[in-house]
Amino acid sequence: MSEPILNPFYSNVKTHNVEIWTLPGTTSILAGQDSEICSAMINNRKLAKDIVGRLSTKFVGSRLHYYAKLTSTMTVARKKASDGAPEGTVVIADQQTSGRGRLGRTWLSPQGNLALSLILKPRLENLPQLIMAASLAVVRAIKSVSGIDATIKWPNDVLIKNKKVCGILIESEVRGNTVNFAIVGIGINIDLDTTAFPDIAAIATSLTQESSENISKAELTATLLTELERLYLKTQTGTPIHREWRERMDTLGKWIEVKSGDAIERGKAEDVTENGNLILRRPNNSITEILVGDVTVLKS
Ligand code: BTN
Image (cartoon, rainbow, N blue to C red; front, side, top):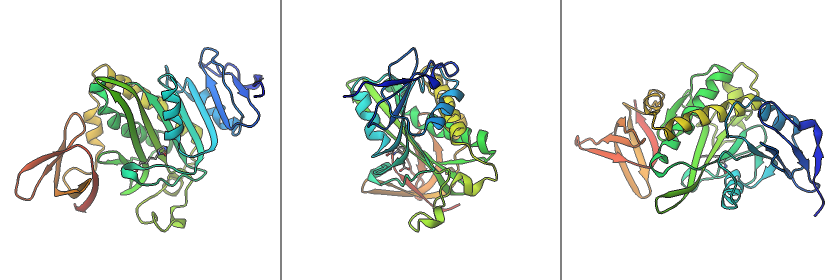
């Protein structure tokens, strides 16, 4: 294999001591902290540099792998996590060819959108709160870059005017009481003309469609990662984030249908627990707590 070549243009970007190495034939950028060695072919040099330069994080993004195109950032991040990548490692792709959604669905991931996966190593008791941290971080980041107040549809879809702008997928590997790693996958429609995709036109939107602002992908990504680290650290130290998450949720008070596997429940979304579970009041007035599912709003 050819030797990586150091590209000095990228060294010492802000607080992250970044070295970018170009390796002919590969398509990633690794920006490393503390002189981490990186193997990389730079595809979108400016964007990667802009993201790293704007990060104000302690460890999230200390390694940032930037790909022009890959199958799924989840797959690549999982491989890196299994190979021992440190907590905070981020995998970003301009384009995914097999983007994955929740419940086995596919996720449309053309160029212009944001697709990233972040490797975290939470304690087992804090694992359920990742959903809250991730969706809340997206809401905060969208507000910060566009001024738009996005909402959360339980458990973790982010909506603008009732249309989905972001999907979140969390996968983890747990052995006994130890979380080996959790991968937080976030896809945000930034520059997507959803009307060009009949399957999602009625239910999805994008930031450029909703905002008059010029959305900077670098700023959105850096803000998102910064907010996510902040919220994640709160959960790790036992500071609750459930209240703010609940305030952003637009599902509560609505009549909904929740599909979990083969089970379907209908009722009124009454509340969420501190762990993020949904409390549903059935028409016969009984209460059930739902851990995972797909919500359809029946009426307000
Ligand atoms: C959903 O709403 O169904 C979840 C969608 C999650 C999409 C993101 S894009 C980045 C990461 N890579 C994937 O393949 N999926 C997640």
